Image (cartoon, rainbow, N blue to C red; front, top):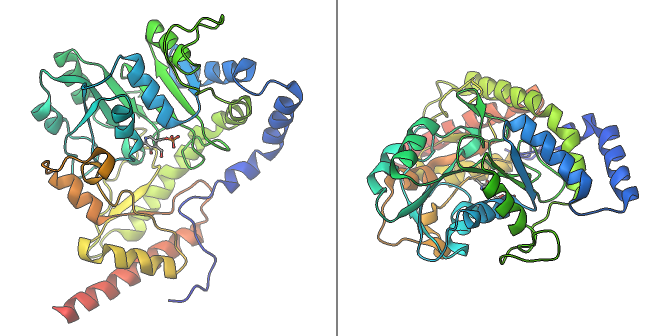
Length: 381
Ligand SMILES: Cc1ncc(COP(=O)(O)O)c(C=O)c1O
């Protein structure tokens, strides 16, 4: 299959940007003319807008999702030796935040259907040493907040939500990031609410934790030149805040479009042999940051290469679970569902504005590549 048609990237922010170009340019000009580039009114106004949207009293802008996680955990007092239960099947930032503070990620296995942290697996490792549960809403799908919330409450430990991939999704009517003790969001450009550079946010209902996060993002400063703790340089830029505020009112429509695209993938791909689709979920619990299918492990890398040859920017999120990644490795631990998922997953292009014809091409090429792989498998067998 030659590279004849235009490349279809895993993500393309340009349709969103084009639709809002006038507003974005006006917001950028306002910030540039203001002379105030970091924090300030723009950030405060964005924080108020996003807090209203998410249904939380406190939202604290920081300069990445990674920092949002680290600062949230630091605000809870997570430090050397503290055990935090989390998922092995996520971007490394989730566990890195724990380890950066000297804590110990305790990996529990995932649910094989959703790839989210399994509450049963959490229950099995929850113990006296547990200081916190850090769950991720992977690929845009809400983790089971009822089960995880109950486990955290029973153990008397905080539940932190990594909402980097699920901006705008709801659980039980309320937005993700408003359920746990703290929520951590990323505005990395590929996210459902993406900025034009790095950015992040922490949410909480707890005023004291919010104040600690505000201090931590700015070198532990109380705001009057007095530093009350060691902190970070993690202030949100005024430019990002202003641009994100222009995009925020559109996010529900974009998430609805992602849902429609996911439905269409289901229609186009259902019934194909050797292909496992993600569980269909047309509810507000899922905002489809990724549309991730599973294929036989032995063929996955070849299928990925063939898709790229055909101009389709599939991605492998994530090829290696975190308990097998050097910086946070747990040699003795076996987490079979996470290991299987890492060997089988393949994410397909999904973004607001993805043309119908492009999506159909993804499905047609994937079907042909799968059939070809099956033929080769049979010939080899
Ligand atoms: C699940 C998850 N957590 C944390 C992060 C880190 O966010 P950032 O890239 O803004 O630091 C990401 C970003 O890719 C992510 O996907």
